[in-house]
Image 1 (cartoon, rainbow, N blue to C red):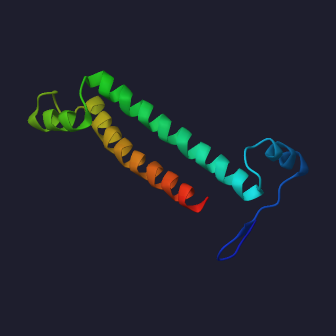
Image 2 (image 1 turned 90 degrees about the horizontal axis):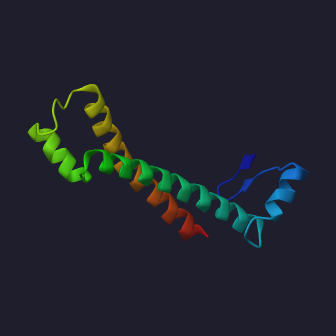
Length: 110
């Protein structure tokens, strides 16, 4: 694989090229953009499912969870499970922003 300021060259084995022919898009660039967009969307969906699992677990949306956690309404905020869920939930909020930014970037380039 080689890079320049504007392009990247990728060598693909012939069997992989045949697989790429079945991907949506006219040009190799369009096909790669399609695959990247699809992967980003899957990552976004996975993080959203995990966030929903936490909402279901606590019966709360993130902001209400944080408010009640800080107020001590959910128990010991430093208890292992509660603390780990709070950290993960915060991470999922950031992860969603990241994947949306990546999705917007790939859309602006294609």
